[in-house]
Length: 152
Length: 152
View 1: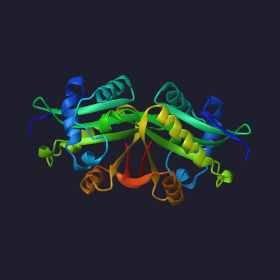
View 2 (view 1 turned 120 degrees about the vertical axis):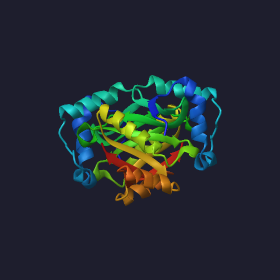
View 3 (view 1 turned 135 degrees about the vertical axis):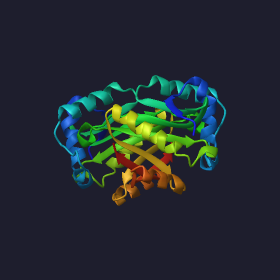
View 4 (view 1 turned 90 degrees about the vertical axis):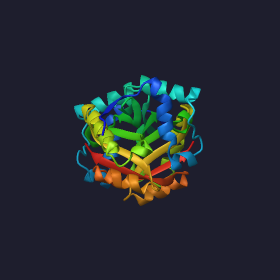
């Protein structure tokens, strides 16, 4: 497999990232799904880039963005003032699955989070994503919590 | 019931907040549980206060801190660049439960999150906390996701 480099996303990656985010039946079923680099998506990218506690990561292989996730580093008083890392919007290009790209992406995210002093990593995954849950379990995640959401 | 004011936490609230966080069997069973305002807890408070996307809220009743939660506002590319609010470390003083203080605390958090442009609120709650899950369901949350965690 050609090597993959994980790095912070640039504005020029936005279209490729949106394509990855949209290449997903569950995401497509949600309200607000869009593949378009709209002004609000560009503003969100700027917000992420300006926030030292948010990192949008891409995996690049032979010049193409093939994977992405977002990390949020969250300070907190619990557990002796332990910082935690939240993972959102994890995607690997669908035609490249099964090559452990997702595992490398997550291992990279764990390394970044440890370097930022995080003692815990957490994420929520749709209960319909059984394959994703097995994937995270193999990486040491435990489904100890209910992930509850509501629109505002 | 005496009125409750919800406001940003101050450094002088730290000891009271830690007492609330510690007044909980599940939290006590975790590694790193502490009621002490240690240097690392104080540093975490400073990190929260310095981060414009984190807010530590307290509910104050007759001069006492009786409730707390933490809000993290997270920009993201998904759902058309929608911002989301993450809720962590929700507590109401145990002898005051059943008086809808938790509901008022959460409604205040939703108002803050809407004012910050968030279109979604999310949280994870330990699968052992059945009462909490019913509480959040009454407030419109749906347990659509698995909440997965791992130590780093």
